[in-house]
Amino acid sequence: MEAAELERGRKKRRRDEPRKSAVATEAVKLQSLLNRCTSVLCLCMTWAKQLSCVVFCSLLLRSPGKRKNKSSSRRSKSPRNRRSRSPHHVVVKVKQERDDHSRRGHDERKHRDQAEQEHRRERDRHRDHSDRRRNSSERPGGRGHERERDSQNLREQQTEREFYDERRRENRQKNEVSNMDSNPELGRSDSKTKDKEPANKEKPSFELSGALLEDSNTFRGVVIKYSEPPEARIPKKRWRLYPFKNDEVLPVMYIHRQSAYLLGRHRRIADIPIDHPSCSKQHAVFQYRLVEYTRADGTVGRRVRPYIIDLDSGNGTFLNNQRIEPQRYYELKEKDVLKFGFSSREYVLLHESSDKSEADAKEEEEVEEEEKSDDS
Image (tube, rainbow, N blue to C red; front, side, top):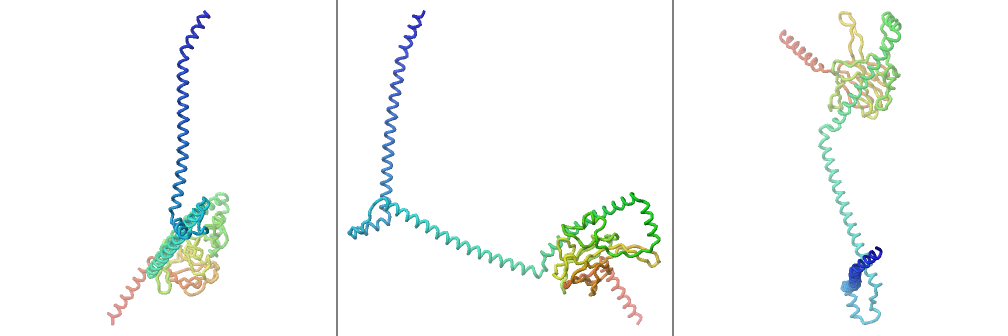
């Protein structure tokens, strides 16, 4: 059995030997081909390098500077004028050309920058001129943009004021209800004393109290000097302020949407801003109050009337050209004129039915004149 296996192995080896020899011969051939290809590539690389050097030298020799040097060398046969054609000289020449090119580029950039600056200056001048023309065209119209901006600011301030007033009223009502619930006996005793004692006019309080204490009496981060009295109300009658500057009529101010309007130079908190430098930041307050009055029958009624109070300003508030005392309420009537500080603006107080009352008075006067003429 062992002998048979040995014979089989010998036969297999004899069969595989020619195949192995053929593979080895093919590998040798491929190796020789690769060696030849590498030699050819090396020769090509050397030839390419030599050709590139020759081309580069020929280009340098054909440059205009080199031609001039050649002509000068041909004319002057002296050995001093002959220049060496060494590679160092070629490198220096290339550096000089690069420097010249960079200088030219720098000069061109400078020229472009100067031209752009001049163009920008002309454009700015043209814009300034056009802006001046626009301003000059808008001046006779009465500063329309500024008025629109002021009206927008007033509207925003009025909405914020209304929001804060509603919050304060709610807080007051809650405090009153809580106080009445906690001690009802005090409420009864207070009502009895009120019935017995005569009604005394309250003076304006400039200290923090009630809901204003909770809000710390600040508006937009600014502490306000004034606090509204408990009888503050929003009027039903639509009052208006008609401002006049010399002979110029300014836009009407509607002052019936709030219970109080702060006048001053501080535009962040002022409901009616006054930009004159003689006015204080918080100059005066236009306040509506619920006041008792006696009717023609002798009965007592209540009505909302406008008042003005000066917040201890530096240059004062003037009612019908008379300076009023600070920290004191003054009742306002129809056609009263208000002035603040040394400002030339005058504010005339009217309401929606003022024009009708004037027209009715004029008609009555005309009727009386006609009757007199008929009698005569």
